[in-house]
Length: 400
Image (tube, rainbow, N blue to C red; front, side):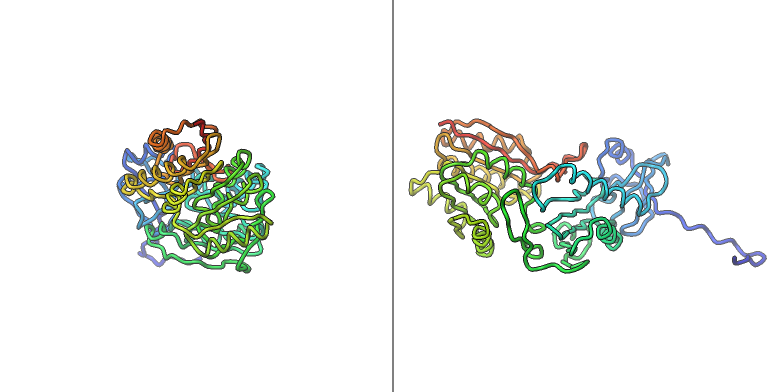
């Protein structure tokens, strides 16, 4: 142990990173919302990605959070007050998230293992695709702990490979680089996964999101029980809806603007011995053409990309959602089913239903709401955090 020289000042103990909240920031903590915005922070002493102790405006400890020096979401709450959390808490929460998915008895080998704040793991996404994991680290706090998190995942799940799909725009808001990296093992060009009786080859590195739209899995299963007659699957991507519904239908047409996605859809159709007429077209234009030709369908699926990625885009998005639902209802036979979705968080469920009602009114279509659905249970919603509930899926029957 080093000894002090006479007259020498003892070294100061290192201070822990800390953030003092405004009254409104403390109210957000009490309200259980895990995000604290920069405007709700009085002062902060921390580096990018630090785990900071939170204090209320009167100095009372209120918990711990991960700090970002770039995002408007300055703090992502990690836990309540108590001992400073260590890697053991990360492991405990990963184990709890994995155990929850196992308890769901999911009839698939592709699903979400960690859904960020909803699993108590801020800004961390982990998706499983058969023997492979795809992770997304969407804030400075988790990005800084990337190696530790991957080490825990490898220890808990022994995957053949771990891929980081850190290529989303949200990372720019955190001052983080957009990139894709193999963090463990190897990632093949295509991974074959199973969803119920359907098999699909998924491109983990180049596919949308982390490879597939896993949040619609349970909605695809629900829609399967209504599918009949002529099926039109719009914005089909790689055919996950079409492949699930086609066995119960007489004919299946799938619309997708991307030539690459259509080629992948055709390969997946061949894997499942299913006949699908996959067309590389602009869905909006093709819906009009089908209507002009007098074609009709008994089952129609609308699963478009998010038209409203922010509040500013909402007004224009309402027009887009109304247009595709109006066109679909004109094509739908009486007694037929429309499965229509929106993954735009900024479009509320109530507003989405109003859009559908307005489209139905314009074409004089009488509708029955059969099922009101959301994202699959492996994408849980955190109470107190409305942002974690984003997907709306309505199954409707046309009466006349």
